[in-house]
Length: 74
Image 1 (cartoon, rainbow, N blue to C red):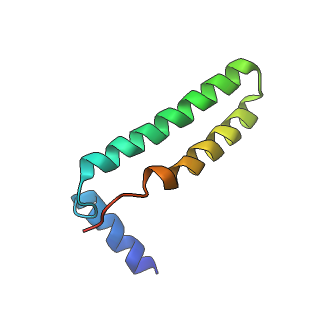
Image 2: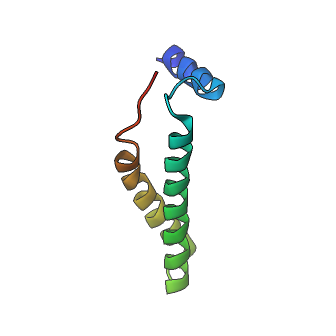
C-alpha cells in the first residue's frame, strides 16, 4: 500500500500521473476558491472560526468528487 502511494506521489511531482495537468490544477484551484469563499462568508455571518472552518472544509471536500470525476490518468 505504501509503495503504491509513494509511486503515485513520484508520478504526480514528475507531472506524469494525469493526462492533462492544467485541468487538474484548474479544478484544484476551483475547489480551494469555493472552500475559501464559504469560509469567509460563514465567518462574516458570525459563526465561530472553528465551526466556519469545519463547514467550509466539509463543503470543499464534498465538491471534490464532482470536480475530479472526469480526470484521466496515464
